[in-house]
Amino acid sequence: MTKQYLLGIDIGTSACKVALFGKDGKVEAAVSEGYPVYYPHPGWAEQNPDEWWEAVCKAIWTVISSSGVSPDDIAGIGIDGQSWSAIAIDEEGKVLTNTPIWMDTRAQSICDRVNAEVGGEKIFELCGNMLQPSYTTAKILWYKENMPEVYAKTYKILQSNSFIGYRLTGAITQDVSMGYGLHCFNMRTGKWDYEMCEALGIPAGFLPEVVACHQIIGTVTEKAAEQTGLKVGTPVAAGGLDAACGTLGAGVIHPGETQEQGGQAGGMSICIDEYAADPRLILGYHVVPDQWLLQGGTVGGGGVMRWLEHEFGDYERVVAVEKGKTSLHQYNEEAEQVPAGSDGLVFLPYMAGERSPIWDPNAKGVFYGLDFSKTKGHMIRSCMEGVAYSLKHNLDVAEQAGAYVKELRAVGGSANSALWMQIKSDITGKPLVVPFSDTATTLGAAILAGVGVGMYENFEDAVAQTVQITRRYEPNHANDNVYGKNYETYLALYENLKDLMKKNAE
Image 1 (cartoon, rainbow, N blue to C red):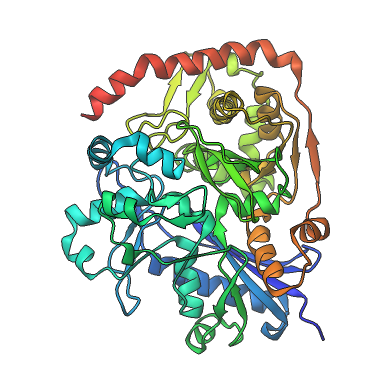
Image 2: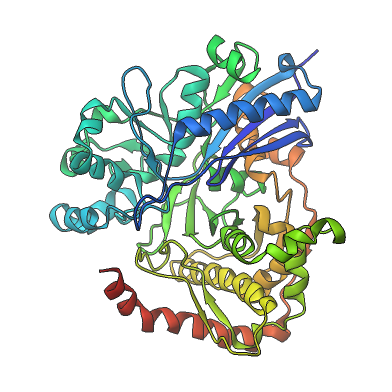
């Protein structure tokens, strides 16, 4: 019998997700396993990669046992992960320290110095991205200056997906879509630039070989099979950036098609077939060959609602069983009772600084317009709207850079909220469609494995067989005036507060 199943692994910020798919993209089983984020100091955000691996092993066992599918019938495994890790391993593969993650801004002063010494414009010209503290580059340099014992023992620097790939196969690689995290990566050629390595002070030996995202890097080892329940010899693809895999899983493979991200983080990814960089945005390779993604990445995505529910959702959690509705479902109902524009309450979703397009590690979350008439529902809806304003901000900048967006394809947990999707459509003025919102990212990872092992002829064939649209939203232009006014307030709030935010951070 021909093997007809693919396994997708997603290393997210709050949890790993593992899903088993049929060739048609149908989910046979899926599970999440959480792990913590550590915040030891202001501006720091880090995770333990070994805890990722423990969660992955547990999740794979659960998926296999609950699906009833034999490990013998899994044709391949694909892995995606969060961006801008800096996992330092020694020659034996041991993790030397927790990795700062994409929210971490501890290396701002290092970036300021390197941009002055090497030249920010020179760096941008090579890699298409400004040197910022959230990128991998800054974290390696931080190790050098603040953890010399770790730096001295470092053999390779891995990304989140390549670390899991290494644990599964023993192969040390760097996929092309994750290259954008290092500023010695030539964004035009997809290769390392060793002159820039020297200029930045990053040893070339730290950098693994760059491979295509659908390349089979190896097979599951005996040790990994014992830990996961997988079959020895199962092929593993390199995988790629979570946002890029989510973009593929949403069916975005042609220029102009755009994915809207609603996971822990927010943002968008516009598929382009010609190099186009803007210092306010993020440029990286797509997991689909010969394409780039012009991206906006924000800290305020679904994580904003997760925070709000965690801190203020006690009542909704208590009555969840009685009402037969989750706390987040109740939150949606409360927000639906509030008119568009939240009666003037505007939220800045800068909960861990902010990435594109303002690139300000000192930015803070703000509620503006609170008074005695405002309810919890107002706060919930204003959070949804604030995230949508950050999406619009990035889309506006992208269109200024020459990238036109016709339609958004939404993925991530927030795509399960019909209200939030309508708000995003209204505020951006773009039609929005929803494929498999919960599984698009793991599906994209699985597709890479499917193409790599020859289950699909190419990416066109894979998307045609696996991606289906479930819902569609059109912008309600009756809300244009109120959202337009609030968006102006949103932009003005940051401009008027950014100096104060910087002063308080200092």
